[in-house]
Image 1 (cartoon, rainbow, N blue to C red):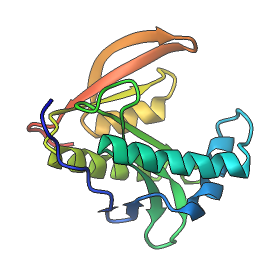
Image 2: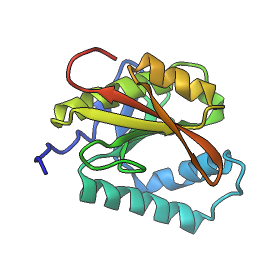
Image 3: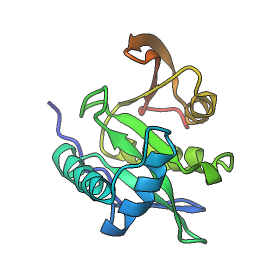
Length: 171
């Protein structure tokens, strides 16, 4: 297995800061997970989720980062790389935002920064998976340079796999 650089854990864009998880992010993460419609995690579960996110980063060398608007200073979601359905060598980009900030280009802005950070680690390809009905996410991936690879199925239905080369081409 080739050696990769550790992914940067502090990324800045024009409007966003992507940073490591803080204990104080647990309550906002709890609210984000509640928006999924599967119930609200307990405060303790959210604290543990933050701990798990930190542990995964240390183990894999890739990061799922908390996303904060620079001007407002408020937590709005996360974006980064995870092993997910892929591998450490070719990780998966992941992002999720609070509904109140949908439609403002934050996911695309953050995803572009994460793609650049991934390229800086020496990796050559990223993956993403989403549901075909998640049109906003598919649009973010398209704008970030991801292209369709295949569709598979899991217990919840179709899963669209997209990929993005990190060797040449802008996102």
